[in-house]
Length: 234
Image 1 (tube, one colour):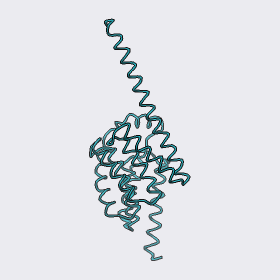
Image 2: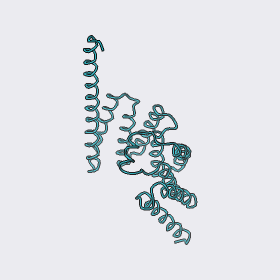
Image 3: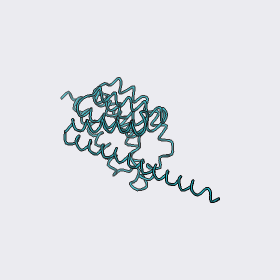
């Protein structure tokens, strides 16, 4: 390397270090706002939580841009507060905005988009808006089935699975949500089919003793008890 290149190299290293420091500092601000918001939310101090979530959203837009993944995450966090406050229209609006951002950034057939569909489906089911819930899950199910067949590519997820073991498969999670939706409608046949399919995936991927597998079995037992109760006319 020529001597004349050394100052430029030093400058590049300095700029890179500054960029890394700035990124860490930006994330620290966001994490602090999120932790404060979650703390207020858990204590039921919704007004103070709302201020922090709004500041988190503004910080994400300022630091990363209006259509960034950080903004989508902040919208989801704020939507959770809206759910606690029973402001369901506002929560739906946030989830829809986050889904559009993720579709634009990651594509229609991405794990990130699937996560948005999870949240929307759960919201619609919780509000007994079964038409929207079924439409959302009808779109999510083939996507989850496709992604289930693909090898994981997220480095953080791979590292997490090496350290903590495999996480609950997305397809099983989705099928459980679908089972919940049909059970809430009183469609016990379709609910049972979804729960059983989820259980088979979890038994194969996680084993019988995993908490998700046990919870799946409990959901089936509850479904059977409801089915017996209503079939007997009690």
